Image (cartoon, rainbow, N blue to C red; front, top):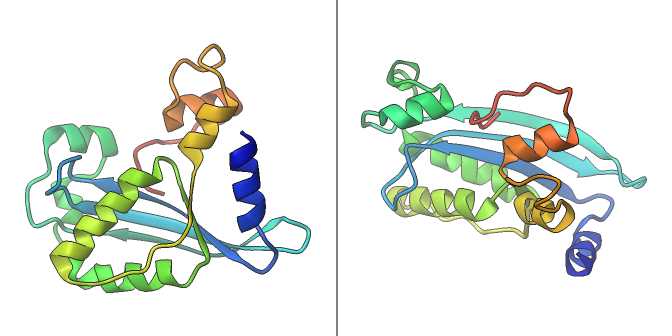
Length: 172
């Protein structure tokens, strides 16, 4: 926990910007594509509070049929994506947004970054990575298995905020 605390203190400085983001995808394989990319950009204020600067939400047509399991998990259907642009159109805009911030944060950021890398490889667009705060690792460090046997986002949110009802497996 001390290493995480020190890392956060070195990153979370007034004036810096942080992007909290998430992706929904067609699956988990090396050929999986992003179908939803959402984020909120905050500026860190002098009092260490976060000021919301921008939110965005992109849907992308993967140009392939979604697996039934992904439809059930995300609530995103082929019909919803039919008229959406594909990743070749949206990737430059996403990469431009994520390049304009100092820090990224995501729940299990390794997965989301892998999906962004795959999109970059397919589309030929380059992006420069930023330090990424993995909120999943923080949850594992701060909340024991006795407190929450599962550390997925839904279980941790329910543990921390038992009265809040959120929809999970939507990047928003």
